[in-house]
Length: 217
Image (tube, rainbow, N blue to C red):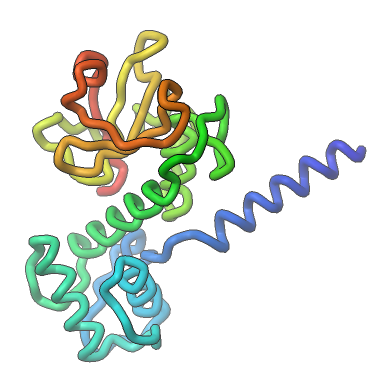
């Protein structure tokens, strides 16, 4: 009985951690267009996301005024998006992607733990699963199952935030990371014993690469 109570408390604690630290960007999931003049919780979430990315320096008020519009335009310009100050799906997707990458990079150096699914220790798919969950995206726990999610993309079409897969200790997808752009990806490496950034041009990863999936559409 005590063991069951202990397990329940652990699950509750993990759930609290996930939801209390989760990124915002529900406007991405809801395909909501946000623009000048709107006041809503989605605007508050947008302002908090942009603040976390170093763009919005004011207090989040939930009102999309001139400061928020200019901030959005600055973000759009830096990310080669249409600079209109309107947060449609393309801009929302880019913000979501940047938040995912920001979350993943915050775990650089976290030790490798077989079966690990928390910042105290990850395995490769534990890192991708947890990072996306922290940003409101649910994917399966294992690399093999994650390889069935989203849509397949070729290496030439890779975008930031895509999941990249490798066959390593067994046939099929047995290792996974998150693509960062410029042929770099972040992953929990059993060889390095921690979360690191590696290159797709590394001989080992180039030889063992098997594909990519896009789960941030």
